[in-house]
Amino acid sequence: MRIDILSVVPELLESPLNHSIIKRAKEKGIVEIHIHNIRDWSKDKHRKVDGGDAGLVMAVQPIFDCINELTSQRHYDEIIYTAPDAPVFNQKTANELSLKENIMILCGHYKGVDHRVR
Image 1 (tube, one colour):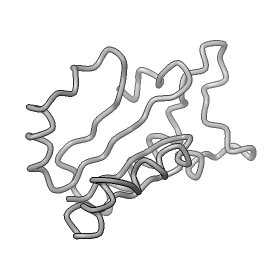
Image 2 (image 1 turned 30 degrees about the vertical axis):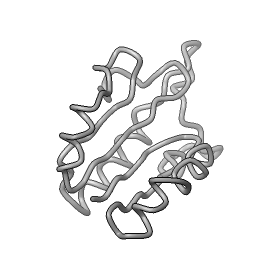
Image 3 (image 1 turned 180 degrees about the vertical axis):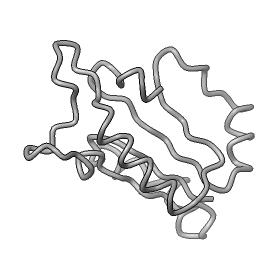
Image 4 (image 1 turned 120 degrees about the horizontal axis):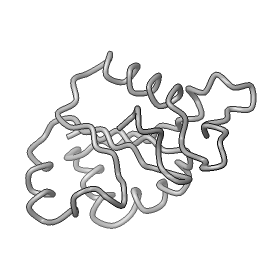
């Protein structure tokens, strides 16, 4: 299984994804996890990723460019956006996702993402 995680703060994910059960799964080749910094796709000279409005939502351009590049390289069985109003992640969902080959997870930040992304 391959999991691609898109985040504007990838350094927050490095530690938890390199310890315990996940570390052992990676070492055994069961899961491959790639963390992508959405700022790498920003066309802004300061690598800005928010929409600039008072609401501070994540901008469309870097997210779309990142997703388009990754989906051009492989097919994703699921593209998941983590949000407070999303369905609850439970054991049933975990079991279903464990059967997938490629998953992409977009981590929200600020006050969420521009609704065009959703």
